[in-house]
Image 1 (cartoon, one colour):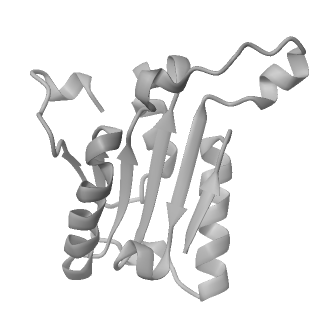
Image 2 (cartoon, rainbow, N blue to C red):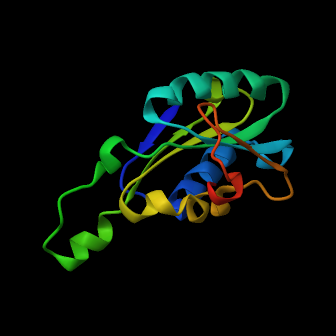
Length: 147
């Protein structure tokens, strides 16, 4: 199952995951780790396939961060209320057969969020599970400054 969540916020993503766990009678506490993937749109699906396969051996939550090409900037909104509703985050939640033995969260930040992926990831981490970061393309010179 793949659920598209355009113009969303991390709390809405977290609520959706909780709902899906409740519907299926599952718990996220059986995850052995949280796998963070920092990649491009071009490499995203291949990285998710590999993470999906790995999760069958080691159940985990996968959080992939893939900024939109060209930063995906949207046109400015005139109305202040409409501007508040126009989030700089699109997301996708994959569950069941589309997510191996866990769940996959794909984050597509835009605008200023591109420079603050930590603020997107922290609310989605599995409590008391180690975090592993993976750069399938090229690791940054200073990994502590990336995710």
